[in-house]
View 1 (tube, rainbow, N blue to C red):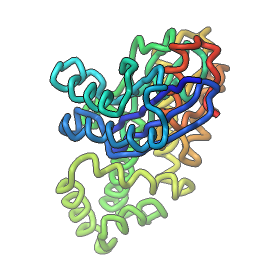
View 2 (cartoon, one colour):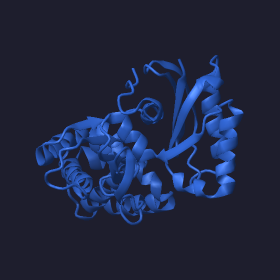
View 3 (tube, helix red, strand yellow):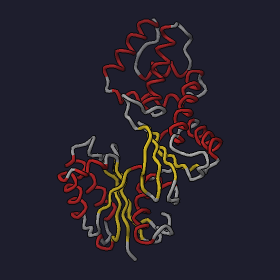
View 4 (cartoon, rainbow, N blue to C red):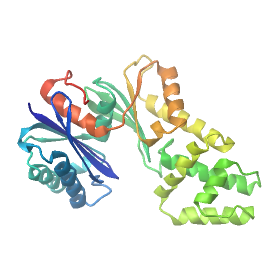
Length: 310
């Protein structure tokens, strides 16, 4: 029996998974991020090679019949120089089947549903939704990045937590659990309020913008605080609107949720309930996009009835 390989290459980490054709896991590997937009292409390709080497350890790479790489920043491979680096990592791992590259959204949707059609909503550091038809991405909504959008994302949640804290300080309002936690994480004394207000602005603006996402876990950790309640409610509305922006009212295809915020309590549960109420469509969680990529590789060989990863 032959094997299939799936990889999920993101900005933070790369995961590789080897399955046999009945869906049994044979090997797995993890390496650093391999998004060629956020890492030097040589480094990104090297991380692909490391993840593949770990996943294929002890296995005959020549038995791999199909492979799919799901990747954030996949458009970068239209550059022949970058594509050559990734192809070299693939063949140097002993793989002789073609390397097929898909978007991270396609791999994530396949991880959460066997349906060929539906919607995938990604809510992590950023946010984006995509429509999938025949296992392929046909359109996206959002995903503009922190400066132009990413509503409902971890970056957005972190920024809103800091904004709520600043507003409480400047209005001399009583602190709640969230605003207290924001000042503690920023290592700022809460009193006097005007000094804390000034220090928080300075501290946040001195860091890279993406570092605002580190405040996001505080929102869900202190979800019962009044300021957190308001932020979570706004995030659920923004993410639901994003997921449904390209769907027709009578569309009952699955919605797959992926990303850290879709699992965060209580935001994730509220988001799933909101989408179910508004669409009556099945809503699924995806946790391992590499498994989705591996299943897409199996679909190339066996069709849509390929066994799902165990």
